[in-house]
Length: 186
View 1 (tube, one colour):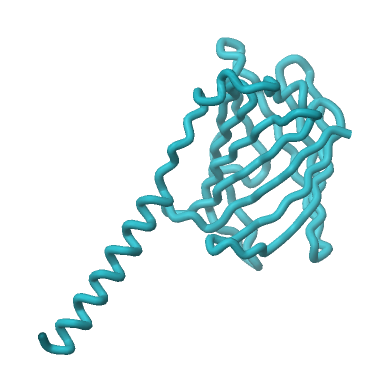
View 2 (cartoon, helix red, strand yellow):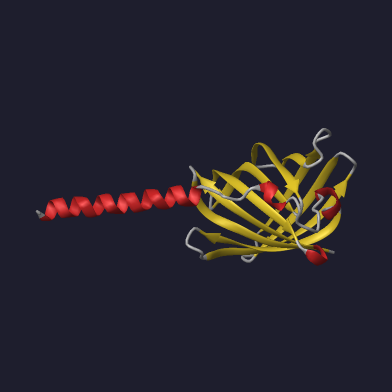
């Protein structure tokens, strides 16, 4: 076998491995209904009504922590809408403010839609047991520019009022990284 043919075979093997990894990481096996019997029950309008604080990190696709941050959240529930005022403080000193408006569906009390500046279209998600799955497009600030990404957020309420949030951030179906947050009520 010639060296050029060997080189082409090695290149094809690399491409096959990369495509296989993309397909495997792009498929989620998590199903919201799997959490329907898990306790404590997560009701967003109860958990986020009032003050809470979150601490989190962003890790890239290789598992390297790129940023850490705190989020101070002030939530109000008016019977229909949950307003979340979020003040972010990043480890490099940068600050960011985001205000979410989530609306609970009148016909399906486990279904929510929402919007915040930077969200592309409408965010939507549902609760089941102690879990909440929330998906949305977002214009993410990266350096001096904004890129369109998709978030797939999973939140899990734990005992003593702790809430764990793990969000995959993707572009073109490829995972760019994860946001991992831990919330606690104040």
